[in-house]
Length: 58
Image 1 (cartoon, rainbow, N blue to C red):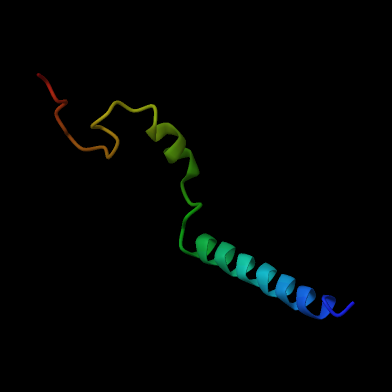
Image 2: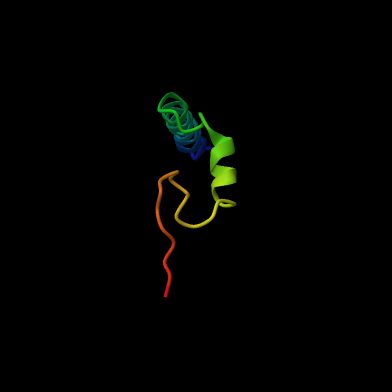
């Protein structure tokens, strides 16, 4: 029974920490353009940043 005096505050602190990290991620813009990251893998190598990079030729 005494372990509940430790587990409940630890779990509350863990939930608060997770919510703080999620809030930071949302406010810093981590979820602003999620479609672009899915399309980035489909672009040819060297054009992932949208620049004019020449492909490597041997």
